[in-house]
Image (cartoon, rainbow, N blue to C red; front, side, top):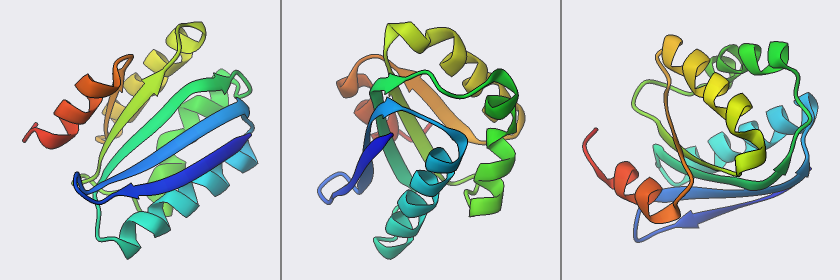
Length: 123
């Protein structure tokens, strides 16, 4: 899996762009780097563009991701908008469900403008 992490200063958003086949170790490393990057910029909003990501995580690994996010340090005030492609819709929707049960503020989108609007909103 490949990724880049940037800071969109005007919006106060950490932007993560992923591509390739994901696995647990790379996913965790990318999330840790993004969280440290956000702390450096005092940011609590993330936009993860996973539209070029290919399947690689099992359902059990996806189910375990909220625990991993808590261990990294993600808190209730953090908002994460996720862009996904149609091939992985079922897995991303499952991920959103388990994240919501864990009281993490993740929302799925297929449109970048809608994702940014949600990040800027008070919801």
